[in-house]
Image (cartoon, rainbow, N blue to C red; front, top):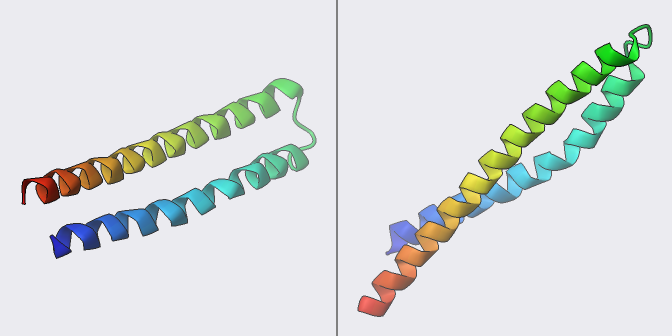
Length: 83
């Protein structure tokens, strides 16, 4: 049980850190908009869309991490109830 709690705590810390990283995405968008001023609108849009796809992958990663935490907590509760 102690190992399970430690694993859940480690997942929670990882989730918190990675959730904090999510706050950097607006800065990426600002940087993309500020640089490459000579590009036309379609080129800028392609870059922003690529960044949005990266952000979506990151959000999916966070979602799967959150599901893993929930699953581990459910297993812990189930094992405690059985005891």
